[in-house]
Structures are given as C-alpha cells and as structure tokens.
Amino acid sequence: METMNEEEAALLRDRLITSTMKMNKAHRNIMNGKISPMEMCTLEMLDRVRREYPDRKGVKVSEIAKKLKISMPQVSRMLNTMEKKEYILRVMDPDDRRNVYVSITDKGIEQRKSILDNLNDCLNTIIINMGAEKIETLSEIITEMSEIIEREFENELGKNSGKGKETKQ
Image (tube, rainbow, N blue to C red; front, top):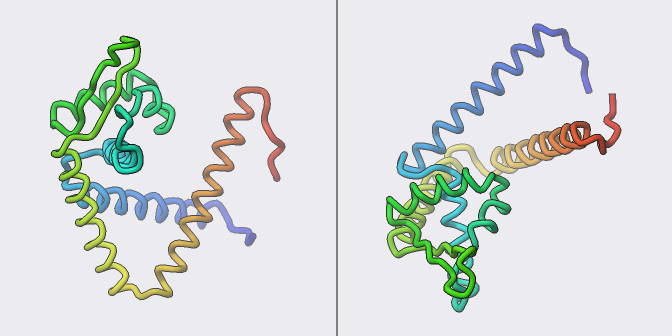
C-alpha cells in the first residue's frame, strides 16, 4: 500500500464520499422515489418465498428483522409503510397469535417488477456506455471495498463486545 500525506488522503475520502452520494441518489431515482432500499429487499425476500415455497403462509416478522439486520420496531415501522402502500399483507397465525406472517401482494409484485425493469434498463445503458472491461474492474473494486468494510465492521463489533480479533496495523 502506498503512503500518502493527510491532505491527499482527505481529497480521496472526499471523492469517495461524493461518488457514493451520487450513486445513492441514482439508486433512489431508479426506485422511483416510491420505495426504500430496505422495502425493496423485503419485497425481494417475500417474492422469493412466494415463488420457491408456494405452500408457506409467508415470512415471520422476526425473520425479516433478522435477515435485514434491523430491530423489530424498525421492521414494524417499515411494514406499516408497506402495508399502507398495499405492497404486503400481514396475517396473524391462528394457532399462535404471537406469530405474524407477511406476504407480498399483487401490487407489491408489480412494484418490484417495475423497479427491476428500471434497474435492468439503467444497468444495460451503463454497460453499453462504459464497456465490459470497465464494468468488470468496477465490480471487482466494489467487491473489494465491501469486503474491507465488512471486515472493519466485524472488527469493531468484536472490540465492542470484548471478543475482538487482532487487526493489522
């Protein structure tokens, strides 16, 4: 790894932050401003369960919270929003009233498809304009960055719980 002074590092951090913010804005535009990334992940999960396990009642709220790594109050607020938009349906388990199952509605399926169509159109345009080689390089860089962030996050969690791994200095 090359060494750099603090000014150079600050400039690179600013460029990364600016680029990330631009990508987040583009991502929101693709989502039509109608749905959050967490809501989209939830629609993806619910639709996958619907297709792969047609006899299943749906997905428990606790499973959604665990999969998205968010608290039960957060998932509850998100599901309230999605229910108002008529993207999901919540049904209480008659055998165990503590369990609530969430399933995707026809409107939720349509919204998911619309967003994925927009995303695919956008990605096709990017691939055509940038070319396969740049896209491959970009994908590798994003994957590497994600892995570094994940490692750092795990290290921080470990430090905070007293079970941390040693980090390289």
